[in-house]
Amino acid sequence: MSAILLDTSYLISLADPARAHHQTAVSYLREALKRGVPLYLSAIAASEFQVKQAVTDLPLRNFEVLPFNIDHAMMAGLLMQDLQRDAGDDRSAVKDDIKLIAQAICESLTHVLTEDAQTLVKYLDRLNKAGTSSVKPILLADGFDTAWFENGQRGLLGDSSD
Image 1 (cartoon, rainbow, N blue to C red):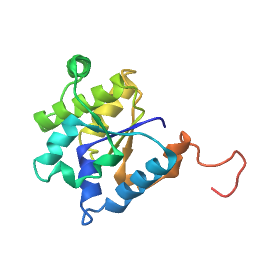
Image 2: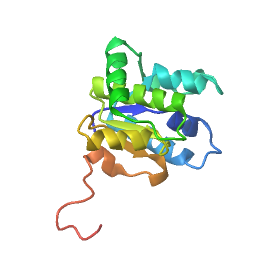
Image 3: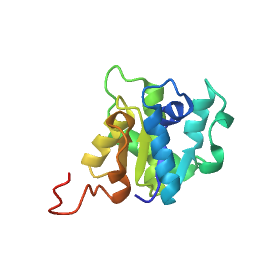
């Protein structure tokens, strides 16, 4: 894992102790900081977060702010051309998720932390299967797993402690 992009749903869980996956969000933050893995806060996610809560409530000193630029916009447009939105998916949510995916691709960010299996993970999986992306989603609902920080390594070969 070389760098993580933070989705709005991750930020909401991180900021709200009442959320079901708050502790998992905190664990990923702590582990990334401990290991020196850069955490990127997209201007897109910051804008979405600001709708219901001040972005200054987040631990901003731990994040690198990632502006949305023309390269990201062009990549997002190409991705939108390749994807068909599912009936019932919120158009604006899908567009913002595609913009985040475009940023991750353009900036060579390897992972996205999210709680959003409905759109972001679904569309990212489609792009990965098509070979358009190699960004891996880390879904908070799956719980905290240090294997993400070890390139998926869950133990030594022949190690029976798994």
